[in-house]
Length: 127
Image 1 (cartoon, rainbow, N blue to C red):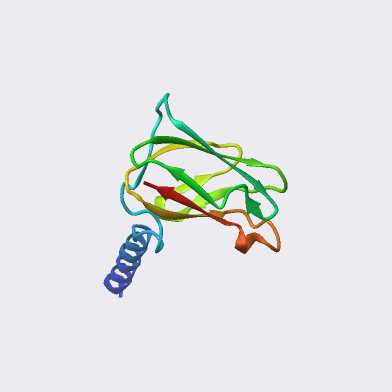
Image 2 (cartoon, rainbow, N blue to C red):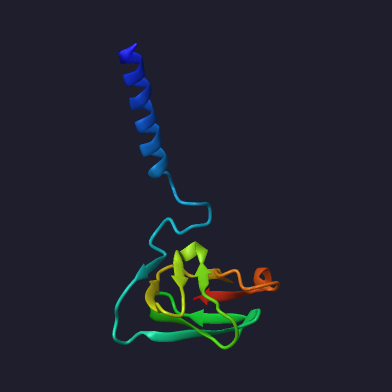
């Protein structure tokens, strides 16, 4: 009986450890498409947010160019996420990334900000 209890316990530990090490959510960054960097000559990319829109429908950056991402709230409280690149920015923590893969990426408000939240989407074009 003790051996069986021990085996069941060990199986539970192994399954728990495997679940903790599972791959990321679908759509999450799984490669080095965007790398956090700290370059002195980075491009500034500030999104200005209001209820329920960003100031531009599209933002453009160059592949391999360091970019300082930040957000300013003109109205309401917002942050943003570029899920495919693993980038998350809120007003208190601007961050710098270098994006190494050309493409079009969706920018979404990452804070539930009211009735128009689901439509608060913009685009990042990396070329």
